[in-house]
Length: 97
Image: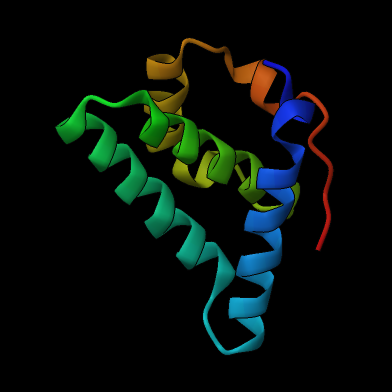
């Protein structure tokens, strides 16, 4: 997957969750809730745009230094449904806070 074509989207997600954290919202919890909801929308609406949204939030989650293993089950479902492998999500992932 060409992550750079979505770089602006990923950075916007990271910026938004960091701002929410500044306001007292836990950014990890916020991202996980967002990922779950986007995946649920994908399942009910059968629209891959929601799956892509979940994938971009997952990428932002990892780039913010959070652990894949902690939510492996939902993350694996997203990757499998999108058709990309586990290693691809880590391509270019960097820890940033």
